[in-house]
Image (cartoon, rainbow, N blue to C red; front, top):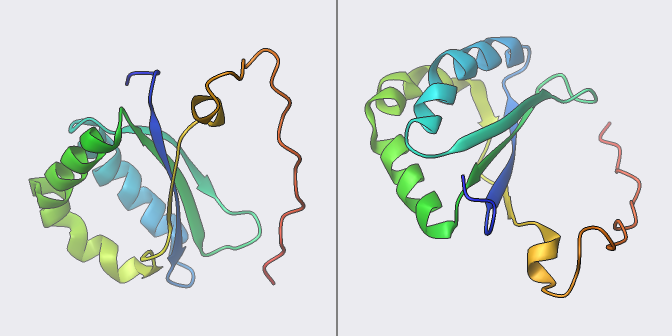
Length: 128
């Protein structure tokens, strides 16, 4: 992946109650390599410590055009078509789960990563 204009997706899925481990096994088995094969880069998968039924993951693309091409290729491709029947019933909510982001330094052309101050951290809202 090119580092000059990367695009990242932060994705959070609400998983059917008690099914996160099953979903994570399916994701590892079927969807990691198949997404990377079409040009996506998967940076990490996470089990939410505050919500036993939430799965969080990050993937990246060179730019928005390559993102669109890779998404189309993956979701119309053989692996997703063959395995979506296993994955979709485990997903309670994934419709509004994607946040596309780009590095902040890219948005501020005069900022230098060596001199930039980190953004102030806001306390995370608790989900009880």
